[in-house]
Length: 283
Ligand code: SAM
Image (cartoon, rainbow, N blue to C red; front, top):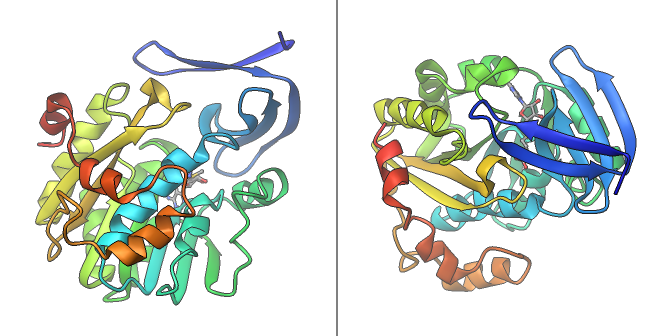
């Protein structure tokens, strides 16, 4: 057993623990404490203010889900905005699409980006791609003057606390909506249905005030509280893809070949969520 044990206990009073074999990095940015340690169970692990963010071993559960459901639903996603996402995992998955001409990634904390490049090279590998602009600034400010720019916006944020708080409010969602091109899709991470149910309920209440079509989709996420996570499919013009009938099977199969989670059958099933999740997503 390793000397040290990392643990995260949620406000609900339960959480996870991972043996910490070696501390690799720890520093305070103007926004949060950034820590990286190595574990035999999950490889390198990134935490922000002590909260689990990314592990080498299970990050694909989250990054494939936040990217491939909206990207394979949109007919021709070219210009993409990633809000947060400083580890680079979301950008890595987006770069699999030949249709993508440009990605803006707006991450408030440059320390997260640098730590991810150094300790999570397989996650941050796309951040130097010529199609990517990494903008180190508060996305709440960045989005204020954007209009009719993006086909897909992915809100890959921390929880609604600290710098992330401004990414979970009606004014911000309205600014994101204005930044969308016609037929655009927005997907925020919408917290853990089991471990952060009130966060999720509040988020959907706000999303439903701003977007016409809103639906949660869920999937496993081993190291996040409760091991079960949600993302919110939001659009005014695009219907909720409640099955895989309307996706481009050729494109989807090409992507699925590069994925550990995503496949066409799963795409059709992810919106089949438990009753308690449907209840929370009523807002
Ligand atoms: N992608 C990871 C995962 O697997 O879920 C975790 C999410 S990513 C590390 C969350 C990022 O959102 C953090 O790096 C944090 O600095 C960033 N963030 C929080 N508030 C922000 C804001 N207002 N503007 C831009 N980025 C923000």
